[in-house]
Length: 179
Image (tube, rainbow, N blue to C red; front, side, top):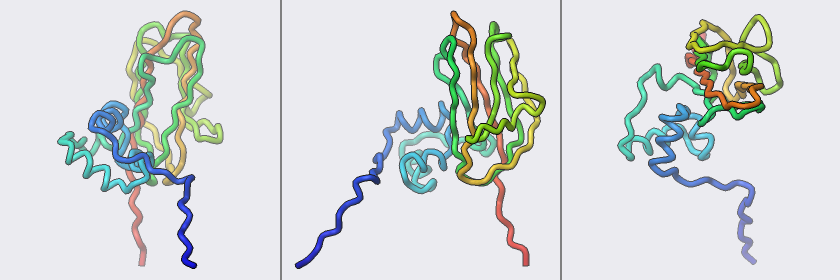
């Protein structure tokens, strides 16, 4: 009697994303090819092939080394959100750019933390709270491949959503063998 393998029903691939989904993930959300590959359970090279096949322009070196934390339409009133990105490879964070539109002062707080709650940015406290500014902070922190990097945004304004944006730039670490 021949036995048939039982398919693993817990593992399902999402299939190939549409051109519009690729544009949303790659250009609007600024996800890396590695992040998209994790979502669709494929290799990063496959994602690049999809992007090229759909005639979507590739990002340059610096654009591809960023995580853009942003809630479309802004963080709703009296809401706290955690936006999570998994590092597709080992990297060193090099800078953090925060954009706070007018009206955020006293209402919106931002930090970067590991998924265990350890705050890694800002150094001097739990949160940053700015108003009507875009500010870049030089920052250095090393993350291993697979580490979750969370951006926590708290909006205490009872009447307004606030469209805060956090861009984390990083440099991929390469493994060098020593003989």
